[in-house]
Amino acid sequence: LPTIVDQVIHQVNIEKRLAKAEELQRDAERRLRAMNEELESIVQERTAQLERANEELLREIAERKEIERKLEDYNKELQLFAEISSELVSNTVENANKMKNLLNVLLSYSRLGIDANYFQITDASLALENALYELRHLIEESSAKITYDRLPEITADTAQITILFRNIIENVIRSSDNETPMIHISAREDEKEWVFSITNNDPNINLECKEAMFAMFSHLQGNGSNSAIGLVTCKKIIDGHSGRIWVEPNNSEGSTIYFSIPKRQIT
Image 1 (cartoon, rainbow, N blue to C red):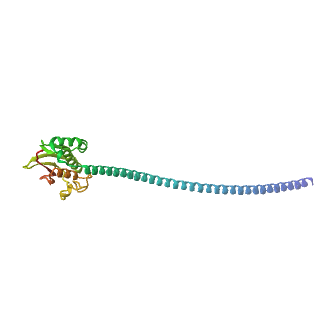
Image 2: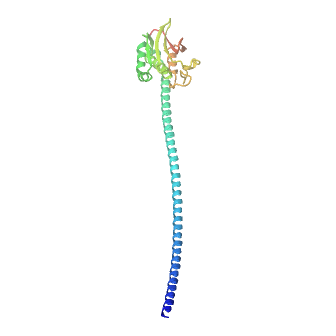
Image 3: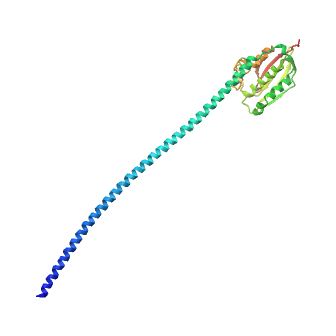
C-alpha cells in the first residue's frame, strides 16, 4: 500500500512540475514576443529616423549644389562684367585720347599760316632729314625702308616744308598694309617749278577719289587711317606756296604723291 501511495504522490509531483514548466515556458514566450515587438518598434523608429536624416542630407546636398551653381553663374557674370567694364574703360580712354589728338591737330591746322615773308633758301634734303628724325620711332616700329635722292634748294618756309614731308611720309606709313613699307623721295626740275615725288609700294591706296584725298578728315586708304586730319595740312602748305599736290598710280605696284614748289627769287 505505501508503495502505491508513493507512486501516486510521485506522479502528482511530476504533473505539478510539468504544469509549472509549461507556465514558465508560456511566460518566457510572452516576454520573448514582447521583446521582439519592442525591438521591431525600435528598429522601425530608428529606420524612420535614418530615412528622415538621409532625406535631410540629400536636401542639404541639393541645396548646396544649387548654391554652388548660382555662385559659379555669379562668378561668370562678374568676370564678364569685369571684361566688359575693362573694355569700356579702355575704349573710353582710347576715344578720349583720339579726341584730344584730333583737337590738337585741328588747333595746329587753324594756327597754320603761310607768309611769303618767311620764305628763304631752303635745303629740301635737310628739311626731309629733319622730318625723318621726327618720325624715327614710327619708321622703326613699322620697319619702313626710306630712301631719297639729293634734293634741291628751294625758296620756301623751311619749317612748313619739314611739316609737309613729315605728314606725307607719316600718312603713307600708317596707311600701308605692307610688312615693310618702302618709300623713295626724289625731285625733278621743270621750267618754272620743282616737282617732288614720294613713291611707295602700298597697293591699297584708294586712287578713285584722288581729289578728295587732301580734304579735311580724308585718308590714303578707303577703309580707314590713323591720320585724323589726313593730308589737308599738306594741301594748305602747298597752297600757301602757290604749288600743286596730287597722287598717281605707279607703273608697277603702289603710287606716288607729287607736290610742286614754284621757283621764285627772294626780294
